[in-house]
Length: 321
Ligand code: PEP
Ligand code: MG
Image 1: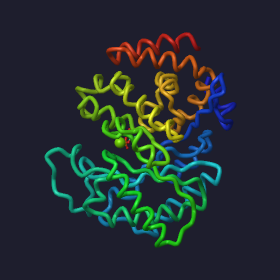
Image 2: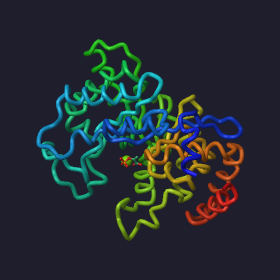
Image 3: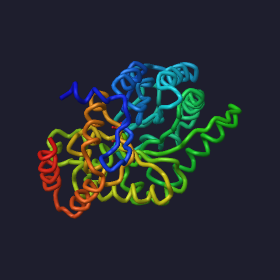
C-alpha cells in the first residue's frame, strides 16, 4: 500500500470533486526540508525554529539564523511554500540565556508571541534573518500563541519596520497560529488583518478542554476530535474564507488519517503533516469527496463526545479501503 501511495506522491492532491488540498510538512531542521520535498511535500506548513535556539548558552546570531533559513528556502525553491514560525519558547520551554522569571502557570505565562512584550530584540533579530529567505521561496511568517488582535498588530508592525530597515521589497505573507480559543472565536476579525491561518490543534485542544497536552493521565480525554474543538475549527475556516484567506492545520491531528476527511469537511485548505505521512495523506485525499466530507463534518459538529466523532469516522474509513 505504501508503494502505491508513493506512485503519485509528487503530484498535487485533489478530492474526487476537484477540491485541491495542499499537503505540506512540519519540519525542524535543514535536512528535514530535503526529506519533505523528496516525499512529495508541497513545501513546509510549519518550520519550528526552536531548533536554532535550544540547547545553547547564547542566542543564535542574525547571520547564523539567516544561513539556516536561506538553506531551507533554497531547498524548497520558488514554487513551494515555507511557513516560518517565529520563536515559540517561554513557559515550559525555558532558554538558558533568556532571563524570564519562573512562573506559577507556564502554559498561561510568557509564551510565543508574548515574548514580544518582554524581549523584542530576540524577535526583531529573527525577523531580519527570516526576511532574507524571501527571495528563494514563498515565504510566510507565522506568529505562535496569538490571543488578541493587539498582539498581531504589534507583530505586523515589527515586520514592517524590519522590512523597511532592510530596504526589502520582497512580498512576505504574515499569518498566525490559531491555537488559543480567543483567536478561533475572533477568526473573522483576525482574517481582515492576516494573510493566512494555521490551526495548532495540540495547543487549541489543551486550551479548550483545559487539559495539559502532555499529561499521561489526561491523554485519552485531551482529544482534538472533541466537538468543542471542531466547532472552533469551523468558526476559524468560516471567518478566514469570508475574507478570502486560507487555513492550514499544523497540529498532530492533521497526520491522523481518521482526521483527514473531518478536516476537509470543516473547510481546511492545507494539511501540514509529519514527513512519513505526506504520501499516505495525499493518497487518502484522492479517495474522498469534499461534499461527502462536509456532510460528515456537519454531523460531527452536532455530536456530544469525541468518541462518537471517532466512531463516525472509523465507520466511514472502514468502507473506503
Ligand atoms: C500546535 O500547538 O498544535 C502546534 C502545531 O504547535 P506546537 O506543537 O509546536 O506547540
Ligand atoms: Mg502550539
